[in-house]
Image 1: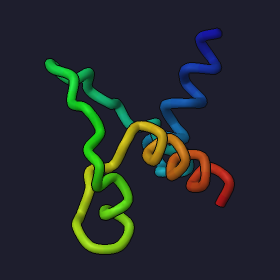
Image 2: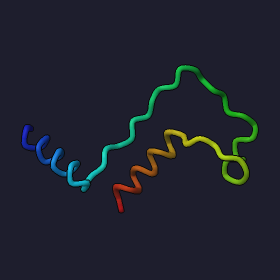
Image 3: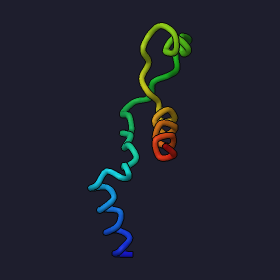
Image 4: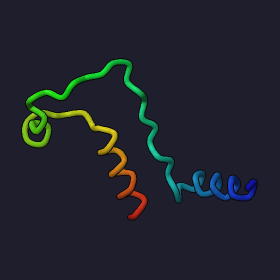
Length: 62
């Protein structure tokens, strides 16, 4: 298993693989508002964990 760590560190240092993003756990719960779809058309909405996970998967495939 030590050689697996070495290989992973070498690949990370050379930029051939990326670490998945670390998503912090929020302190409080925020409920979804009625204007949930406005983030796609008008107002900017924050990225959700699912969005970040999909972006990470797409980057790994490319």
